[in-house]
Every structure is written in C-alpha cells, then in structure tokens.
Length: 286
Length: 68
Image (cartoon, rainbow over all chains, first blue to last red):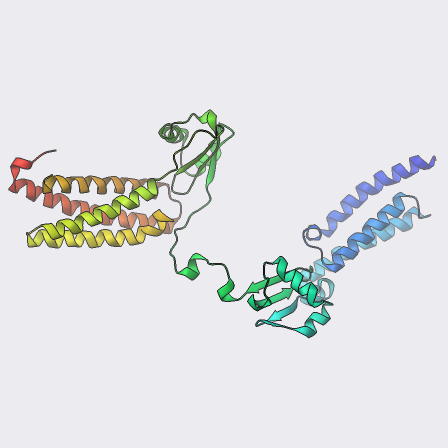
C-alpha cells in the first residue's frame, strides 16, 4: 500500500476509535484535570499520534496500549466512585494551606508551594492580604480555594439582617420581535395579556428585542430602537407607596376626629396597615 | 375637601392597591409569597370595610356633603 494512503487510513480509523474510547472515560476529564487525569490524557494523545504516524511497527500492539490506557482509567474512576481510598490515591487529597488565619508551612512544603506561589494564588482569589484569609485549601486540581474572614466577606442580605422577597426565574416572552408562547403559558399568562402590557408601554411587539416577565408579572422590555425610552415597571413601588400614604391618612384621621369610637377604628386601621407594610416591604421594595 | 371626601379618596387608594396585590398573588408561583400576599389582602379588605362603615356614618350625619 502507498504510505500516504496507509497513514491517512490509520488516522481516520484512530480518530473514530479514540473518540469512542474517550467516551468510556467519562465527562469528568474535561471539566477539571487532576494530575492523574493530565497524565492519562497525554499518554492517550501520544499513543494515538504515534500509531497514526506509523511509528509503531505492529498496529495491534499500539491498539492494545491505547485500549489499556483508556479502560484502566475508566475502571479506576468507577472504583473511585465506590471507595474513598481509591479516590484519595488517584485524585489526591486537598491540602490545607492556611488554617485559622495561619499559614501552615509544612503543608506548603508538602505541596511544593513557595510563598510566592501561595501569594499569587491568593491574589487570584482577590485576597491581597494574608491577614484577610481565614482558611485556604489546595484542591486536587491545583486550584486554591479561599475562605475570607467573616468581617472581610462580601455583605449579603442575611448578614445585614435584611428581609428579602423570594423571586423565581423570569421568563423570556419576546425574543427578537417574536412572541414565545411556551414560556408565556408557563407563568400562566397569554398573548392577550402581553398585548395589553405592550400597549401600556406604547411599543409594538415587532420593535421588542427582549421582553422578560418576572415572577410578579412585571414586564421588562428592551427595544431595537435604543433612542426610545421605555417606562420601567413601577407597579410594585407604587403599590407600596400608596399603602404608606393610606396608613398615614388613617393616623391623620385618628388625630382629627373627636368621635372616640372612630378614633379607635382609625387607630386600629393604621396599625393593621403598618403591619401589612412591614410584611410586604421585602416583596414590593427589593 | 370635607372629611368624607378625604376618606373616600383613601378608600379608593386602598382598593387600588388591593387590586394590584391581588394580581401579584394570582401570578405568584411561590406558595409562601402567595400566602403573605393573600393574608395582607385580607387585612386591607378589613380596613376598607371599617372605613366604609365610618363613611356611612359620616354621610348620615351630614347628608349635605353626600356625593359619589
């Protein structure tokens, strides 16, 4: 056989075989490479290259090597899922580099980490001061994960003691000027509602690039024509403000009236509304 | 503006807000949020009823200011 023909035939065959074999190993290879994964990948690559370039005399020997290097890792991964001991050997354990804010030098040595390496890895995680770090761990993939000290962590509504309303996923109901019926029905709305809302905003559906409905049924629009200003949905804020106004009104009436029974009724109403305002604040304001 | 007129206005505002909250409650999928909304709608309904009763008394006392 002509040599170039043989090489191309081998390459095509190996291409298909490798593709199928790599599927056996599974998906985890591509997402995060541990050192062991890296070795396997390189060996598989080299074997494939060598066979397809006709550098091994015996084709079968090459294929056997390829098979072993794909089936064995796949087996080990399967065992690793079942037994932690296997997992620790193959994938390695994570190494704690900083604990309770103190750098553990012996662990650093174990991981062959120089202080510069540690600092640069910490900087990648936005921790420029070692003093800010409470805990840092070297993952088997070589990445450093950092837990900042409590007072250095970003503020969340919970730490500030804020009460926030729940909000589920918004649905995209208009895309590129086309009305999407499926997401619309998913939140229990229909085209009729959408047309009414669009009319309220004063835009034609063809002019809408993206239209999203949040869980409270408010429609956010982005138009093709950026010169047009679309009114932002304010229904929630408006409802909240009106409630506050009504509550203030009730208090005013309570002060104004001379009738004791009416005074009591107004006072009670004001209190009820104040409670409602408190409860609704996370839903309507944030 | 007479007192009864002011109260009428407040009642109208409350009714408007209640309607808005009702639409939110109808669309809301989260059960907890829905419950909070419905609870508060009931509270506001009670307030509206009280105010309407008071409005009736006021209009009875001063029928010359009775309007819409």
